[in-house]
Length: 214
Image: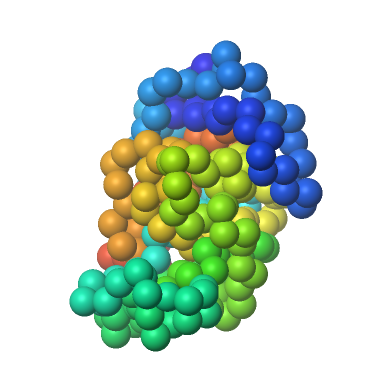
């Protein structure tokens, strides 16, 4: 198995119809996980920009900066924004600027999916202008450290000329893809193959401005 490839266990509890693909066997699962760019496959600068324009990638964001003075404990539902941790003013500005850069760079969109939490939906809306809420188990923290829906979304192939953009949370992504932990607003560029993926780049909020200069 080439470096950077991360396969996921066959978990029958979350068969999401829009993303059918063969499940890997337990023997195919790699014990070592890392979401750092794969050795020999990492992309940056003009090369990364060229590939993003070609499409076929998953770009997973952890939501931008939030107001940590608030918690999610008292929320009564995903649309109960008054009782959730929300994007800070800086986080909202960062999400808008990232979207402006994506449009200026003419990167193909395709699917835009987000966790149904208010901060992730807001990030996606501010960045892309549209969003589809993903099933809760796919992108949001859940008990037991199992995120089979997220693993499926990260692994499902994407057609050339399109990308799958996702906005979620840091803990589920780390549980599925491994460390290092995503900073707020950081994105990971992944090439899915149907049963796993190769990590090609990590893009911080500041990195988008550098890409715009390519």
